[in-house]
Figure 1: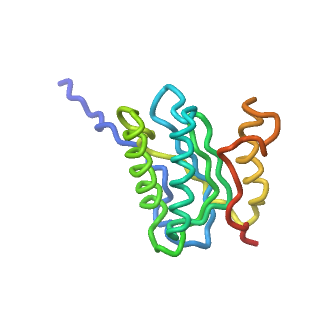
Figure 2: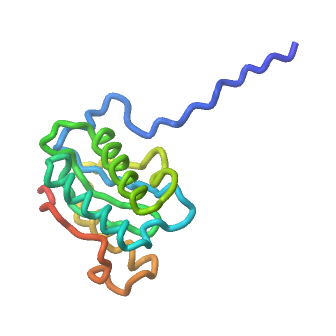
Length: 162
């Protein structure tokens, strides 16, 4: 008797069970990766649209953005949920949907982002300034610019919580 007892493929859960991802008291270090093997954000128009979407979502109260850096193939964010009361997954999902539609208008075919995204809940003992310095200096580490201030798709927007 050769019965296959393997379970069907299940995606690994990346979020913490039972954690309140809508609590604005927490800061998240999130990374969203582009789904394409190419580097879609080398297109300056598309990159600027993504930055504009970050700023619009911030102005709409969906999130606070302590810092961000859009690289050619991924986006780093240090964020917390905003006054909208939406949980982080919904905020990120809405952002990814909106920016994908913008990409389609720019001629991109297919999905813009990978299905999931990665986050790290910053613990109280972690230095948020260090996390933001890591994010902002990403283009320097990758050899895209000599100093972080020269990268046009990054910045520190909201004051860091104490």
